[in-house]
Length: 419
Image 1 (cartoon, rainbow, N blue to C red):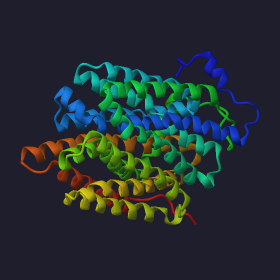
Image 2: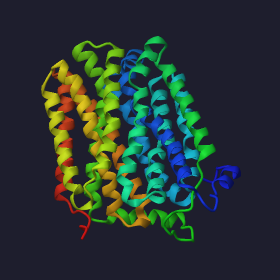
Image 3: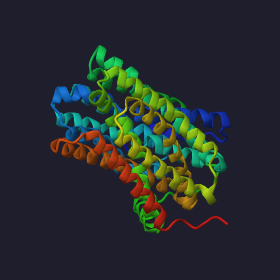
Image 4: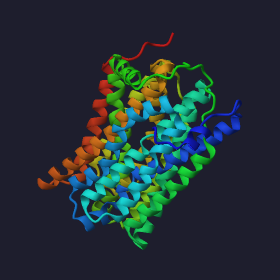
């Protein structure tokens, strides 16, 4: 983080008082970067057909392309968590996000599959702090009893980025090319960076923090403390399959499924992706609003994970156009329950570990997305090689992974119960 210009360091110092309105303005500015990261992580669903045609990609290669963003994104979470704790929200996101812009340009100019994947890696690293800075900012500067509700609202607003990769991106690709899609997203990312640069500073925290800044070694040591806690494993295992199921469908398989199974055009599949994205905007605020609290929250999380697994299983076994269009929309709404997992993580660890706990949770989520997209790419290739319908195998495997995550979350130790 030492590469941040002195001007950034100076402007990162907060004034003595920060109005509630300015805190909300800063959260909105941070959310614009998160919205772009949502757009980047879902481009594969619409770009898959032209990329397959241009680079002669099979399902496994397509899964690796989609997973590269999420692998880089997830792998950087621990470092971004340390960066936020040591250097602040503003410096961290302003330093990292230009890599997403560079990755967009590299992807747009790529002439080989390896360059395309490298571009995705750069975008993933650049977007790595995008949602983490939002959750840490909310935890530090907004009322703790409204964490789930505000996080849900932020997830909903950030989900607007997925709207870009529905019908608008499909129309743009058909009118120009997939390369123009990356140029447009890169331009929007540059605007988001400028907005954060101009509007965000570090407010004085609402809760006391240590005056002495810890060393890098101490910061890494605290991650070890967190990972050694017995309830961390269950949280990580469920985190690795929940969001991954939604993004693997919306961000990779939805477009190819509708095009190959039902003969949809790129724009028609983009319309369904847009509808699924719109539905997903309402889920997080809804579940955040009705958060049952620490005593019952984990039961809700388990129940909705199993319901989502059942929906994917039903989705896998039918070949009805109506179900294949309506199913993703229902899944989009129900995926909002995952905001309860953020609230669960926040209540499961001491305040001093909030930033790092969120980083570990987010890392598990996005490494899970990368692993699921890579794994389902292999499943699709194997199914095709054996003459089976690939999307049935993909959706059934996602259902099985969700059920396994719910079982692990249930049987492994949980945090101490609230009195």
